[in-house]
Image (tube, rainbow, N blue to C red):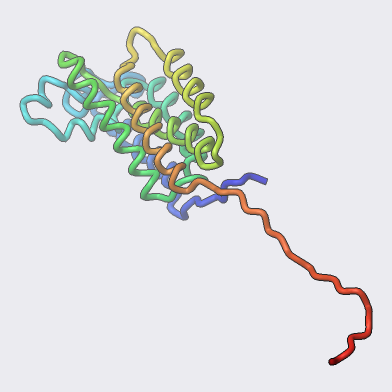
Length: 211
């Protein structure tokens, strides 16, 4: 039996997030007139166009988390959101889950904003990497095990996702924030072993005399 007690909410936050992402993709696909690839102008409008963010379009740091470039992009992200999201629901309550998701996504977007001011960035992968990092390190930290293995696994997954059109900065920012939040939550709920015991006294059967 798992040491983690399922705390999945009735709302099913993972499925809600998947539904929102799919709905946004459907909306942009309809506007594009193409279900396979989203129009570049729409990506620039609803995604994170750093030049526009610097001019005051700060809302793009949030909306870009729900915008995807093509059908393969959203399909891959939603698959990993399903895998890591359902696992996260077993460990974190809804508030903690959403905190990890959005802070990780925002961290990835801000890192992209600072180091790649010329980039247009879209996708939920920074937030998903945050969930992955939080789940990976929380499992270790909450039971008092070494986190070295969890860190190595997390950064290995990061490295194998490097590619020509992959925003590695968003992945890195999301992963670092997810690891940090997962570590803090795991430390707070760290299970301390308890050893129940009972002391039993036994006396020999003998006659007591009064003085």
